[in-house]
Image (cartoon, rainbow over all chains, first blue to last red; front, side, top):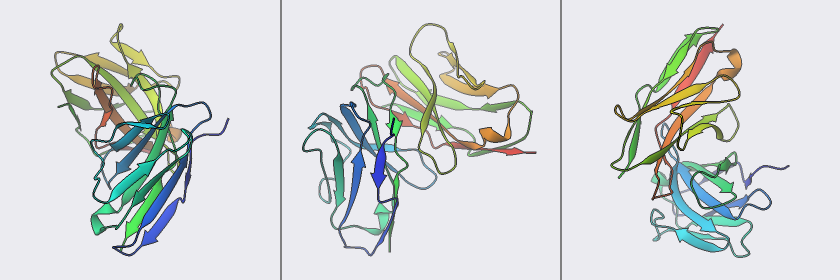
Length: 115
Length: 113
């Protein structure tokens, strides 16, 4: 069974440019998460979806970040415009349900460098 | 709000030696506790979790962790490590009501031959 797929794996952009990350969760997983992991830190939740509905986006900086999961399967996270402080690894995870005791399966992440 | 502190950012040990990775959390309510592992060039994987019941939980590869409510700790231990255990280990907590994982800063375990 394929795991969580993310692309691209690496992205280097200049500040003020837009950038987008794509995630395809494990088949059948209704719940999808986006996390940001700064260097030397643990992942921090940005947004989580149950099917196509964002059930918790309280940590998403909405002035420049947006996310969508239109058909309740794959998802896109966008930053526009990017700032130097956005350099981080962006992780996508999926699980079979919203309850936290359901195991979250993580993708390899997209490492973003903003110059 | 809940938080997690992993007291050691790096832990070097020799192969076949025992290891303990420390994790303390703060929360005013009942919690679930997790350890995730990230091997080099791979995504995070669940290692073990405490939800309820026995305070000692084990993984399939010989790690164990004990929930200590009075000390608000969930330390990870292995009696004899292997080179293949080289990875970064993340402790995470969730209030049973919040249903949201809060991760610690991670501990990099390095095994020397």
